[in-house]
Image (cartoon, rainbow, N blue to C red; front, side, top):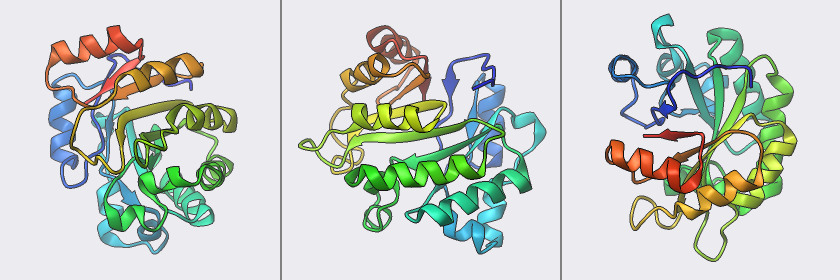
Length: 222
């Protein structure tokens, strides 16, 4: 969107990891954008104190994204509006990447990739409720190696109005095993005109540079 990023190194949203102190450390070390841990849309609309506390951030953390997940379009849309109204982050990111079975089973996280029409509906609901800041998506390649949908999903998401995409090119089934298929990041970059952020198997600075060179991605997420 209209957000200027000064360093194309993003801190990935990680449950149990990217809390306030960790984000501050990563900003000091040069992260161009940081994200909260992913937060449940159901928890947001129920105004769960634990959930809302995970979203709180300090001004010095900006630019910051809040990542939300859920399976019901209406709930996710309402939750996105609440996040914007209460916290005014720079980005709201929708999680279509989490491989945890209890999340996937309900059609949230990477479970949404089983049904791209549901993914469309959730995304549309968020964009309908929040148009003041960029809405972005972080996703996986698909549910398994026989159902790789990342490029098709990217084209659909761009049409709906998403402003950037992050791809972790592993499947739900892989979880965090095996190897990330960086060629899928390149395929996504070639298919859309919005920024594509590459993610997966970046262990050091050389990996980050290699990913950018091999895939032409606009930024890397660590």
